[in-house]
Length: 356
Picture (cartoon, rainbow, N blue to C red):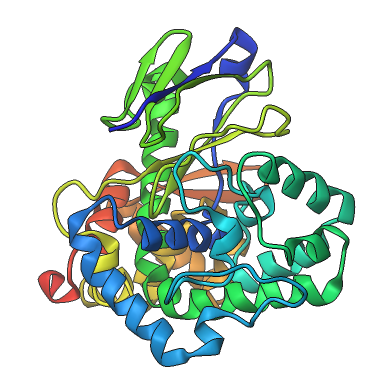
């Protein structure tokens, strides 16, 4: 165990602290590269690590990313190309453009957003990271707005994600969504301090300071200064904000599976297959989407059903105590109940055969 980071809150910060929205595939991919390099955390993930390293080796240049242009930037065997700027040490900052706090539906959407990031934003982000650790020389082209450098980075992220995250994403996203739903209920029932009290064994809330035990070798104080804090469940590791100029500081706390298996140890494909045996394929898909908190129209579009069918499935799940529905004008907004969250979280961490 390393030193601690002390995050200081004012009353304004407490009022502005919130639970993150849908999980970011790009942030999960970035933090998975850190976990791959660190060999720390849940011992059971050694199996995932071996599979990923074997997959990267088998995919060759595509899995590890293209050789950087105009710079040396050595990387370890099997290490993803983009991991050179992701982070190798828990004390190192991670560029904000690789860990967005507003998640989109797909990795491709998030990479499109990355490619459209203004040059001055990329440059400021990389300059901050570069003051704390060395960066490969090819990041100079990225900071200068070179579209070729950005395209190569996006391709490397996409190739790595295909091997390391995509096969497990459904289970991971379901586990994160279930945790997020539980935190939002906790927020509604007991307020933000109850949430801060329960973020895990390495985090201790002693008002007005949240102490986070890290594996870093130095400790520091981080003052939110009225910006508030976004609390985001993390699939692979925790991450503590360190950039004093970050517009929206985000604390990633690692979601522990509790009982059962970690989502990364579940069969690729995630909980949908297991839930489908219990609920039916359409209804299982509806339950997964409702974890994000959706209207009937959004639910229909994302599952590929008619609005009438989506509403019917939501009604059945509501009668079973798995879903809560709140009407606002002509719209109905669906969220998971505590029972629905527990079922989804258990399914994400349990082999499909166990639900049959």
